[in-house]
Amino acid sequence: MIIPVILSGGSGVRLWPLSRAMYPKQLLSLFSDRTMLQDTAMRLSSLGDVGPLICVCNDEHRFLVAEQLREVGDGEGGSTVVLEPCGRNTAPAAAVAAMLVAGSHPGALMLIMPADHVIADTEAFAGAVARGRESAESGALVTFGIVPNAPETGYGYIRVPEGRGKCDGACPVAGFVEKPVRAKAEEYLSSGDYFWNSGIFLFSPEAYLAELEMTAPAIVEACRDALQKSRRDLDFLRLDPEAFGACPSDSIDYAVMEKTGRAVVVPLDAGWNDVGAWSSLWDVQNRDDEGNVKRGDVLVHGVRNSYLHSTSRLVAAVGVEDHVIVETADAVLVASKDRVQEVKAIVEELKRQERDEPMIHRRVYRPWGSYETIDEGQRFKVKRITVRPGASLSLQMHHHRAEHWIVVTGTALVTVGDRKISLEANQSTYIPVGACHRLENQGDEPLELIEVQSGDYLGEDDIVRLEDVYGRA
Image 1: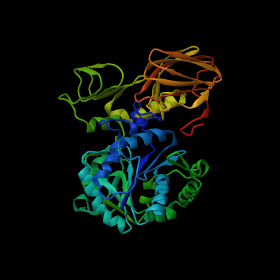
Image 2 (image 1 turned 45 degrees about the vertical axis):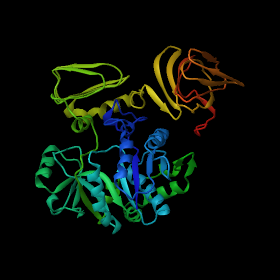
Image 3 (image 1 turned 60 degrees about the vertical axis):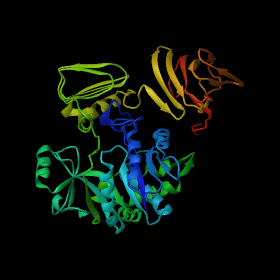
Image 4 (image 1 turned 30 degrees about the vertical axis):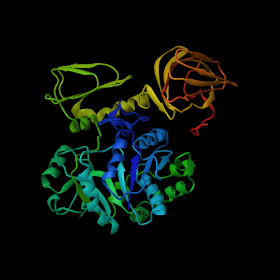
């Protein structure tokens, strides 16, 4: 049996402004109607004999991850969502998953997959996994090498001793190479001795933990401690913050694969892309006759070989070539396509200025639904709130603000103090400062309302949760 493990802890800063820390690229629909996380989960159906899914994700993303997995049918059947209290890279995440698999499914293999990769040919992917299975069952640590088609400088490389042409099944790894400069990448491509490093792995949990114990014992110790002190929180497994926070941060490649003698590589030619930058999205999507990828409300004239993405308004471009233009409700990115890796510098500067744009979109998702700030000024803020059918906000109060709620669609059940009232479209109510209140949608359609806040402080941290069905009180 293969236990799939999806690693969903990344932030995807190079795809800003669409990808944000609180809503990263793996949770976005960039290629189809499904998100990248959902596409990764759906890919498992091609593998045949797979056990219950394990997904390791950031604590802040837990409700989004759980809801997206539920939508594609992976929220049942023993699946586990493991919450990391802080990011510690892939080696610790895989170690925690390995301990869970070793305890619940001895003898099974683990297939480690990042949540944010594109694989166009799922049958070819399944075939590569099948070819690596015998080696993994024999104790090898299998990685999947992407057959390169360009001198890519954004990927690491894997060298094989006898060249790609003789690597039909699993081949021994001669070495791993960091992201090269252009001239070196061209040399690797022409030599025929290198694959791109996919970051996808297949091995037994026992083999991985044995190697990790030798190369990075502090990781094993910290992960074991964090797992032993973990606790169940609704449908999640929450790792102990102090123990996991003490864990060294390292990748599977650095911690194990570059040091082990058990590493083998299986060729993977399946339309793979790790979507590490906006240029990658241009590479893997259908383009028009002028070489442009257009998403959303986009109008162009004399534009060539560019990526244009609109989310909330018309984007018009004239006479540009080899550019990326991405619009969201609160930010616009314009970049030369060959310099999109430098978007990270913009994100770092925004963080230095302590702005919100690296962290959240104007629309913020919550376990009960979402809210979007549509206007704000001195002593007021206006939000559009959407509550899913059957969902409810926490019972809460505010020290500094009053709220006025106007229902647009649906029916709201509102608690204010010891009073409960039902509101329909065009009806409203007022929540005084300090009043305990709750908003519920007991109907079978989404509830939408406008919230007008007023007061001397309107920050999101002015919320005192008294009761909460999502465990946030």
